[in-house]
Image: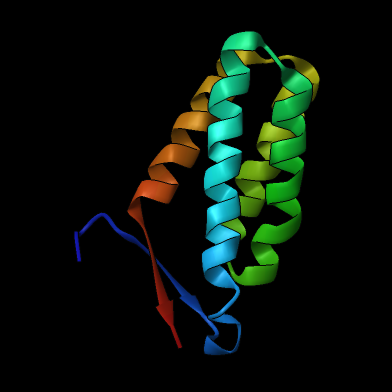
Length: 101
């Protein structure tokens, strides 16, 4: 395991739900990437809102925070903030390792 990995312990009772959950976050990531050059703030807001609503439920509190921040920055039309938050999301998902307990 790389030393800079982000390891999240998830209850094994929800193990069958996690692949779909993470697949949806990758879809959010792609939607945000497509929306930013178009300044489609509503699309980013919706992706962030969905991420915020689901993250903590599955044990991914950082995704809830990122989602909230993305939604807020999108409402404000803060393109620089959104670019930074997208980079944080990319980094988080790239380093994420799920451990079932």
